[in-house]
Length: 409
Image (tube, rainbow, N blue to C red; front, side, top):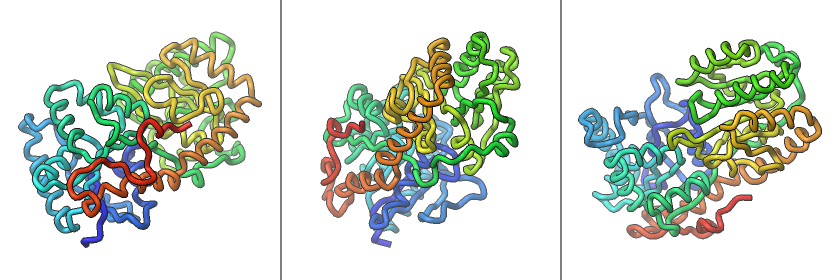
């Protein structure tokens, strides 16, 4: 099919859980005039989603580097798949879901055939790439030849300019988004709350992988602080799984909070939506740990679209996913008393929670609905196709804006 506009390469893609894969899926499936073909990481027994052409391939490598002997084979096999499919599709532009390893495959095709490419950057991976001379070297090659680099936040874009010397004329900010039709407020459902053990207690919710930078541990400590202040009712529901789970469970036990910290595990999409709709306050107490930070925080948009006030940590790109003091509170989440103050303030003020929830719904729907963002993406892609590129040229499509004007809010 010579009509394909883009070959998209991404390790993470639905149904595999991950914000970056969800972002790409929602963007490309909403562009009827822009045809894309997705090469996605393998999931045993999975081929979908069905509303985009998706082919599964091996994209989970032992190392992102090429000097590691274990990665040579997987990189070479992946490159052969990419080249074969790229030729069959009529040599379209290639869109890399990340700088490494996807972007390195893309850069290799570019080096051989001058194929223009777009590279997405999510923020969190920059720390990994900066930790090794080899990975830094490879990343600079990928960034240096990309026709267009799409950062998920102004924070990420700033790091690309400062630390990776990416030029402004090739850099675009495109935020992740939310399906505001699906994520929407609903009436309280006491039967459902009872069925999952929440009952009529006030509930704080965090959704996300259980890893240190998400700050679940700080929220558990803040809950213990609130108990000392006399709040023995508020519960903390944690949706998700990950390497921190056993440490967090023993922490909750040791602090005497076993009945008030509810580990809900990985949930299906419908159950997750109910959690957002039925909680009282959403918290993402993110912090920077050894350079690892939260790039944006799609979960904040999903909570706000459901009409919930949010509390987020001040590091990384989370401040761009909300309006501080209007739709929620931005705090130093590493400071337990400060985090406890924020929760206590909102829990004692139902009117403020309601107002923030309403403003959050408007904010998420007007600025971050996927249809709004896919139109922005389409404008950015307008000049990053081989038909219009004629080699490599700056990616300033009509309708897309340079970074300085890309501020949201």
